[in-house]
Image (cartoon, rainbow over all chains, first blue to last red; front, top):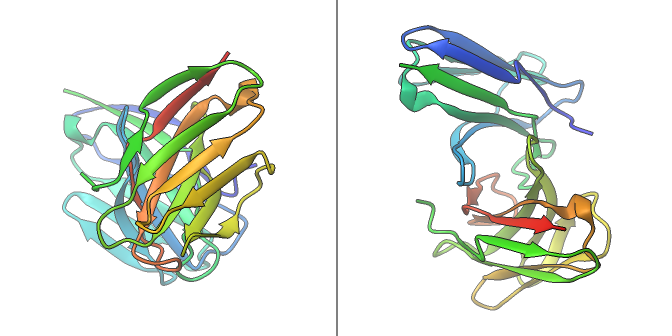
Length: 112
Length: 113
């Protein structure tokens, strides 16, 4: 059973398009992280958000933590082929927890 | 690169066998967590080791066990392998047990036949 549900599961878009990935739960999290995982590799941390309503930007990526700390979104502007990968959200119930609950993942393909 | 190394990268076992997976943590990190990632799923927390002791465990049976050594490297042992144990096993090192900072290795892909 996954505490975090991500949507969509699969997304295929053209280079230059915008997209949003959603991460939802019925549980409240102290922190929410987003990772990207490429084939044959482990997940790589993109961002950590800890405050309800918090918005963080990383170049063309915008991350938001929901006001109730039960959901999050990742928005990519002008997607590039290098953005292709599996995007995972992960939540920590307790502050600073290393035992994270990962979402089901969104597999993004950006077509040149 | 995270500086976390895992071995072996791939291995095949048969049902009932035992397996040991190894992980070297990033320099300066004293905590290691293990995750299981089944095909098409997100990683699931198995357990964490800090100061050579298990410090937190997910919903995995006792046949999943581990060790941490004085140099902070770690092993994951799985006994009586089942077909459903086929997965990518990820090790993550952290600078402490409650930092929320995870640096993952590339994983060990286990196939159980």
